[in-house]
Length: 450
Ligand code: UD1
Ligand code: CA
Picture 1 (tube, protein in one colour):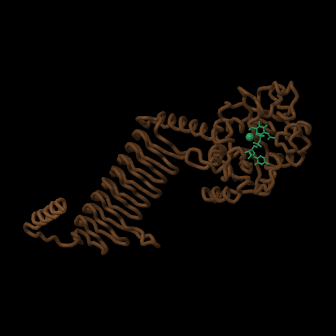
Picture 2 (cartoon, protein in one colour):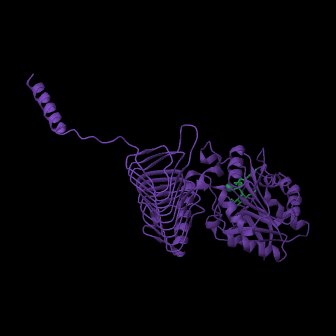
Picture 3 (cartoon, helix red, strand yellow):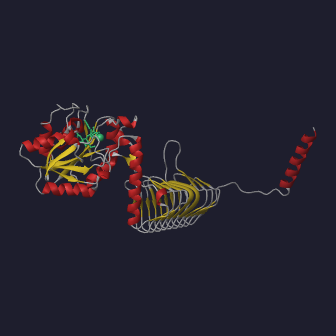
């Protein structure tokens, strides 16, 4: 049965005290709503709809930048969770199958939990709700069960003392047939304590129509919602701890796990070694056997097997480091391909470039890729040797097996196997250094006497 995903992300997030929409605050290096999308992947959604409201334009842009196949639906007024689900209706009008509702501010729902909900659906229940035993049920909606059947959900505000004593609570996640869900949502009214259209009311309506509802339970930690900066900071810690554990279990060495920061999509191969104080921003893959040395920052890049990066290296978007290549201290690489076994060991900037296999870039090499308006490419051939402090003024190429003399400013292409020297010729003035020093010292001594 195909499943479609609706992620609710229209709320104001007032308690964040922010000009930025809540779901755009970052968790694990990516906007928070991306965690709900990632969880939803467990059900291989046919179509995913993000319901936006507050800061809708910014959220829409972030969503479509990430995945142009996402559908963004607008909920201009936030009249409640049922009203928010209804905002997703048009986007799914041409789609059959089930709909699962997740929240953009609830990042930790496990894939395995959603799979269990799908099983409950497949076993015949019309509506499946995700619940949890709350340590402190506080203001959560209460799930009123009768055996395996869910009778209704009572919001805290509307609950009596007996209902408030129930500790089995609503996470907000709902799974049902799509057409049925929209039908039930249509029947929801707002005559309650909050004056809102509660999504939770669909359970009582479904039961009144002779349909069947159930709730399955997950760990309370999965239902953690983010409403404040404090909760965001706590969620970050939870995310990082889990990411480190997953890496360690997958055969990655983390020398000081608590100092390594992961993003939602970080992929590290077996036997990768990560030294202390390394940050993985979004979009990093490191192949088996590579070593990321201390204090390096990697973003949207790929590191080949056996490569060594750092200490103090910066890999920016589009850095593609070949197998067994070396990127040393204070080296920045951006949108550049480093061939197998190439070495860029010290104090170098390589941007918009291709570096051939086994090439060697000396200390202080700079690809001058930007003329103030346009970016230009530098091509360096296999086994080329770039002398220290060479400025490669792009667009420019250095052929295979070619060399540049150190201190050169290379503005013209260097043919294969050639040696390029592009610097002023050296002249030595015999004795001049000594004479100059003597004159300066004499001047200083004369000034002291005055
Ligand atoms: C909801 C549930 C409650 C559950 C709790 C779990 C309802 C009526 N109540 O309550 O049973 O225990 O979640 O956290 O569903 N949203 C919109 N548009 C709206 C309203 C909400 O997009 O018009 C989004 C919010 O941005 C948020 C989510 O839906 O991500 C939940 O809304 P919120 O107002 O926080 O619901 P709760 O009162 O927490
Ligand atoms: Ca909430």
